[in-house]
Image (cartoon, rainbow, N blue to C red; front, side, top):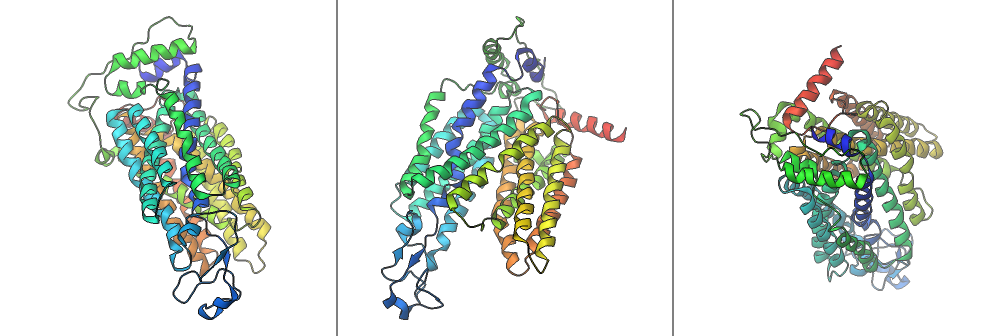
Length: 498
């Protein structure tokens, strides 16, 4: 039988899969912390200068947040905030203030590199091995970054953290979902995103109680110790083993899963053996990034996924930047920014199993486009209503967060097993580029307030329409080879023409 048939025999989402899913989701929390911890670690404080420094200052209406003529902080500046950050320790203010944002950009560069590199290695050498390597190295470098003696050492370590967090996030998602049957895969993939939302909220709570940047950095890295308890719990992905024609190992793991699931069937699991052919080559053949584009069917999926991931990330962070100046307590706002996404993930679970992946992606992208269009129209009015503007922007964030959850599940189900991590790695790179470029689009708002929302509207609409060219994967087996994806696209084309 094929792999998804074996999962139906032993249980698509039994006790074993649920246990592994929860363990992997909890283990991912410290890596999720690293995605946003620089919001607090690299925060810019408020400060004031003594009155006697007034002669050396310029463009200052008051003595608060003033810079000297040399572009540096005035002598004997007094920080008014309780928290510490790399800005307070290394005086990264005035002419040096850009270094706070640069630290996040360098971290994002690490994510760009880590996702495709480690993801590709996981396709060749297995999920489990790369999971542990990326997990422990990300935690170790994060811990060391809290002990950094200088800014240069700090950003170098954050770059390394980004590489391993980028690889871990991708491998963790694939390892979580590959052993879950098609009926529950959408639910599990979306619930992983919900754990990320809880991580954001808990990070805000940690930052409130731990306002020393070094202690906070170390505290967010320590939970990776949890990984040592998983060494004997996490096995290799049997789907990957099957794709490498290591059938006996895969069947052994599936038998263990059947036992833990309490499967009523006594029939031993027997996977269908595939033979190499001149057309397909060995099923244990290794694939790389170029194979995504040399195969016509995989190329179409890859290009659409690049567009979808780029737009999702771009619009998500764009809407976040446009509503960040809400006032109030920064810790409360940060916690709420995580919790507000939870309802969107719950809704996406229902839609994934109702109209399917393709239509769900289109509906959410269309909702994001509509909300951005409303924001644009509101910004063009002479008397701006901030309440309606924030409400429209928050609805847009609701839709784009749900869309991000859908596209993650969709990509995992579209890319064949033999090249799944490579494909998702390329898509992840596109999303990181979208997030990096987003602030430049937001800056256009200084010249034309409604221009960023117009760009977000067009991008969301285009991505939603392009996504309709993808085949539906709801209830379908995950493709194992390039030929499986080709067959899926042919079947989809027949349904469209009927």
